[in-house]
Image (cartoon, rainbow, N blue to C red):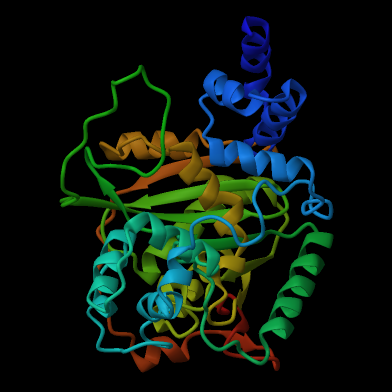
Length: 396
């Protein structure tokens, strides 16, 4: 009897419910008279369960489904089966604007599993938060964050403008002429404020930053990205992001870097967003470009991206994203820190970045006169002349 007890103790951990019933029943059958009582005594299995094992042993009821532990339909019924309409009621709470009552209390609240469970109880359904979570999974729901992607109605000539920009850029690059992508990065708080991202530090020694992001000083980094040379230049403004600031930033790039790289260039191509300080509707943008053209002697060709396509601008993913990666988790405590972090930005594809601080006071709301507009020596292209144009130096 001790050997049998030891044998069963050794193999039992490897058996599922059905297998235990059958193995114990087989042992009881081999013992003969009194076998069932002995097995029940040794294994503490109930007599009805052992009797079921005997039936399983001599039955082919599971022949077509040898992996099944219980008979089909056995076991406790699910909450959805015991409470008809539960799934439908739950789904109406999750999506009240489409499939349920728009006046539902949950229309304007956070729909956690606990909240959904409490709301279901008001509809005479008794379920806990765990059951709600399981039902949501069955219904195909999961936790989702907002995903950026909607850009409004696509312009009918969106793709044609992309192709136009590409042809212009390639033609300039083939002639070794500068092609730059420009834009203003989002304004950054200057001070001991939280900066998104994480950095390696000793355990339990996270940086302590201010609890509120009320900054008295802000920075406006205006970027110029040389597409052919994979080089970036950032002019960090300390006040307003105006069209004069944008053109001054481009002019600083030309004087400090561009002129050296392209000593024989008489033309330059700028690709820019359709809005912001370098937007195609900005009168001051064109007036300032005319000033830059006159002072540099360059013919400045400009191609704007169609509305809602700013993320296609090269500078966004070639320069600005790399800057954000470089300073992640590091508070921009002062302008010097910001300039140093931008200037240290590199990547495995050879990106280099130069940065300068621009403390010039730029004035907002400057009115452009008709005389200034008439003085712009601008040639517009036939294809979307509002997006594509060349500003040449005025003859003196």
